[in-house]
Image (cartoon, rainbow, N blue to C red; front, side, top):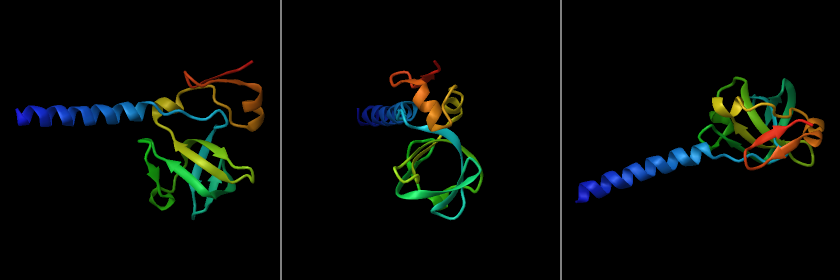
Length: 126
């Protein structure tokens, strides 16, 4: 009986982790781009110099928070938000399936002109 309970508990924990990974919701002001971590807080955002905000959060493909020093120095496809001063605030490193969702705005002007469906997490061009 005890082994059955342990097996059931383990399967529920694994299934719960898979469900949590597949249900990431991005904010309507999230833009698509590439980021390369240089020397924290310095980053290259879409090939241009930028800085991480003091409160910046970087979420990995598994939706766990990553420390900038633990990330490889390579270009990563991400969704990101900027704070009111132009610093990079939130970064989501995308999985292959998330990166395949197109179209996704790359500029604030595109995000203003397009419509975002929060439920299906897709952008609709006018």
